[in-house]
Image 1 (cartoon, rainbow, N blue to C red):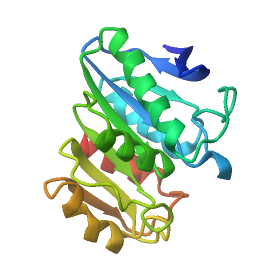
Image 2: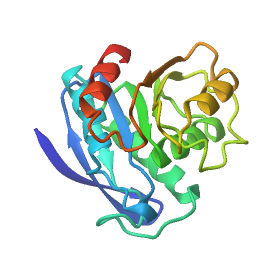
Image 3: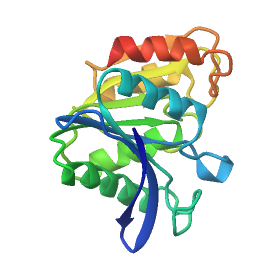
Length: 201
């Protein structure tokens, strides 16, 4: 059952949707760029959450500060990292012990920075269309928790060749999947995305 929740990130009240399925494993899912209309209701985010739910995970998706009804304003990914950490803490405070982190586009970028700059307890991390052609990933180094990365063959914001080139820096053991024909928004390819996600989780 999906429950509307709120948690604090610094002094900002952040809105989220929690679907509690399992006491032991959960996932925080982050959304695309809020300045370009991204929020937790994005269809790709919905697809990611849906697959984790099917796999039995408790899921928490939320709106970054300044998006939707979350307080604050866009903070160039810096404050948004604190939102991610606050969301992870929220799940941990519920007693969930194994917590994964998944992000789409801008959300994947924010997650990566949060993971490499903070000593946080994340079991596994998933990146869907990390925007290496649009955002600066130069300070992102090794991420041992990175389990898999997915992008589309026609994604010009997360070009498959560029992702493939940088992936060994992140984690040479991470699984890399390319969805043939899909662009950054996965229009007409959400079913394939769901299938590939299901095989990776």
